[in-house]
Length: 257
Image (cartoon, rainbow, N blue to C red; front, side):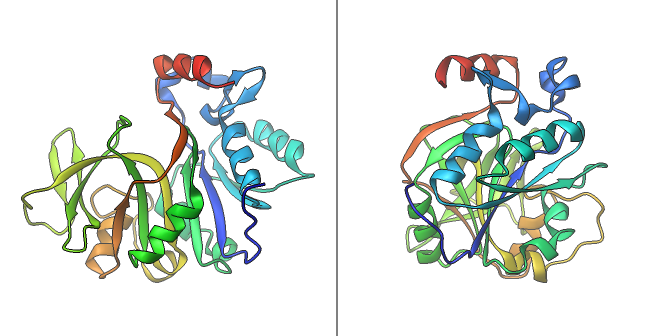
């Protein structure tokens, strides 16, 4: 065990809802996070083992379908990790699923979010340290060395930290505060987030579906309400892959044991 979070200030949340359409027909019967990689070890097992190594005793997981398979997972881990399952069907998005479950996160200071199609082993202690040093309210782990399909736009500040200012989309750059910003840096989002719980408690939306990074989603609303959203790197990453399609699934099967 690398680090025990005795203060219980952090609650992990694995975002596992969705239909996994790019991995069909596999995902017709098996939700993406539950797809086996090697020797019966599933995508989600890698992240659950990571959380166990970091000393966590509880995790929240949302899901959209195949409830029986998620309940089986819950049963498998019950002796070492408390898994709280949250049904998310119809799909609500990352922001709304957190907002709808404030009763489960209100006692914690931070939410550690990890995308359910991501396998990662990284220096969590350093990530938390930088989040605090940068006085960030919402931190996103990125890398210049690892490719990602999710590209965020950052603006370097005088203190050499990187503010999140926008999102690269198929239609062009989306800037959250409206203005076209020069000297931006495109950064690869690795699907790991540290979020101050107070953002979820204080910000509201009338939308039935809202994620983190799109127009009028959580980040845009956070910035408009003067919360700090930072992009963080220079964190030691031992393993990483985001599994979005058959090719990436095959790579994962070769890479991970």
